[in-house]
Image 1 (cartoon, rainbow, N blue to C red):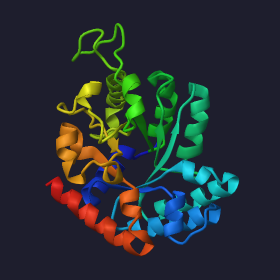
Image 2: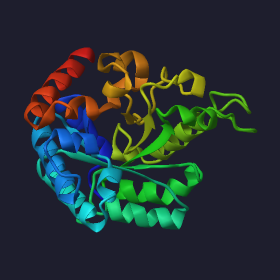
Image 3: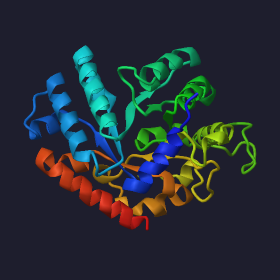
Length: 293
């Protein structure tokens, strides 16, 4: 059992740096703009430069695993270096892998990404709950027990997801809602919050969070942002920057969840290029801190 929690580490980073999470997404067009090859060597260099720019300016980085995975074992070796460099620089690392499976298989993914000292060690990983939130239970226990975190997809920013995530569950209900009115998104959030509530000994901020898109009509998906959770519920919020959401709107978008919401931006920052990235991160981080005063 770890003697510290991911929620506590995240709270400290938010206090020190604000809510900016720098996405490390080495798209081919960005590699080209940065003068790097579309190869494992290219994504390695891209990732290490992004880490250097973020260190001391933001608290969190989020490598998108797919952009490294496409180069096979060499891509994974590059990702291992990027994750290790980020953690050595004092950055919280979120591996954006979106893994999901039945409980025993998901346990293997949790071991790969969340075991201290493992080659792919990250501080948190994104996971897909659409085989049932219960399928995540063992992996969430493993994460929390190792001082790690997870972010569970609940209301994602891609428009194709709205029909599924906004669907109402027959016979569902909670203290706040009548049977048959709870959406899939709401049920996921309730399940994650219930897990955190069962581990209150780890502090005032939960170690398991949810992914809520900043471009999503959260109310239409049954997501309540007016009521705080106890312990506080961390939120990873994509959709800012290139996808259209304004960073300064984080409080109005996420309400009571805003204090522990990570504002994730990638392309809007990365297009500043390797020479301009540090300046872009500084400016966005300052803008976000001012917006949350």
